[in-house]
Length: 261
Image (cartoon, rainbow, N blue to C red):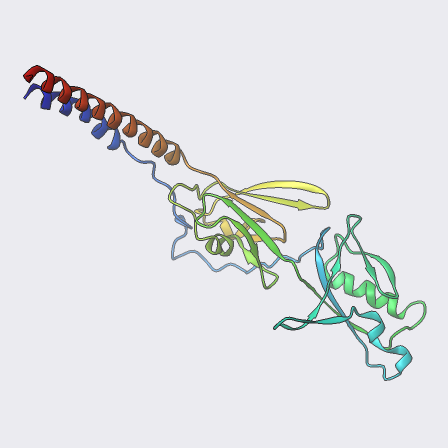
């Protein structure tokens, strides 16, 4: 009987420790009410960065063979089971692209429209190389990275040219029960400078943040909450107590055997 009481006294700290109040974590947009007024949707204009890969296609209404737009486009290749594949223009470490017939063009820091305007200018001035040219540009490697307390951390390739932080976290499998929604970090490189911003996913001002719409190559980091450290501490303590109870139980059992004999 005394031995059973002893085991109960050993198990009591484990029970009390497991009943420790848990930290309450905020929910998405929990401060947003139904009466909040409508806000304008803001879509950022993407700026070209080093190591971006660009699809650029030039078209012209000219019917003259010597003024064909073929000379100003990269050749297409046939992909396995994917149809026609066009290679892109890589923005080098100096921020330039090497364009056929036109030479080096600085692209870093420009928008797609600004780069298209520069290419059109070189096609028409000082000599008209193509009649009434049009230029289509899009990003081929738009990607963001989501790390930390999410279900599926890693690289996300974006098929379009826009992704919000909520969409990125959704594609990463959502924030785990141990992640902090109110202090999500976004690492962003612009014009050679690294910026680190903090965004609160529970705030009603979420949509006003410059980090709500992610840019290409952004890194999103979800920090662990204190609950994770507490949970790990509780698990370790429970393991130690369980081990201690096992040792005591074995020792008591062996003692009883020897006493009886």
